[in-house]
Image (cartoon, rainbow, N blue to C red):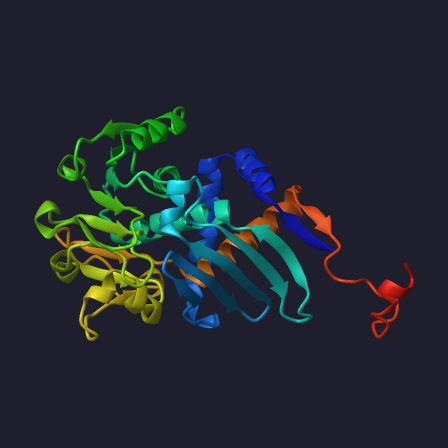
Length: 338
């Protein structure tokens, strides 16, 4: 039997643990897997692009577990009341090839994206960072805010979106959490005295939401919106000015802010900072940039975390996805015996 988690099941699981403790636990799982990054099979995601968006498969494996995620990115969906990103994932046993878990990955992707942002900030932002500017208050925004509360000292969010309704929803959803929300009137207002700046916009175009002159020395930038070819959020001069950190360099050069830079522009993969193989921030005045596009190992960590939680505490449903046969050669018997 295979464990199955649908959207309500994942929502119940997060609610039972609590969003902030859940994200704190997920950050730990991500850090564990980033620390053993060389042990994973790695490849850029398999992408099918269309005029409206992209559909992708994201596989990875270590010596015992295999995982993949199906995910889409369709920015225009929001105009018709649909999510811009949806997904589903599978975790399997390498030794037998049998699936262990099938899970929704729409909520889960939002959670793991936010937790990865917070993990990067833990190693790249100044330790005393307490205020974050959040530019773009779409479906990812609340998760980002709570992940930073879970893993860093951030407790104040200077929030900005061109849509006032998005700010109202963001503020309403975070009532009761240990966050002070400052409603910013512009990007300039949002980044004023911010230690960390997160950009999370959705438009599929070459945009420059943030310019170099707006960013103070010492800031940490978390750019998560530029996640496919032709889609950026930062002015090229700001990227050029920053110490740039990525998940998997071959993928980020195609999809991230890095696509604006020449092929020899220096970057550091985040796992090398976490393991101590490479420096992160070298001075208080550095502008560090985590150019996040999402990578399969993060989904692996998410699926591994979910699987461990439901094995320990329950919450999944068993589904009969693989035939259980007394005689493994008699697959036809599944039909003929009905």
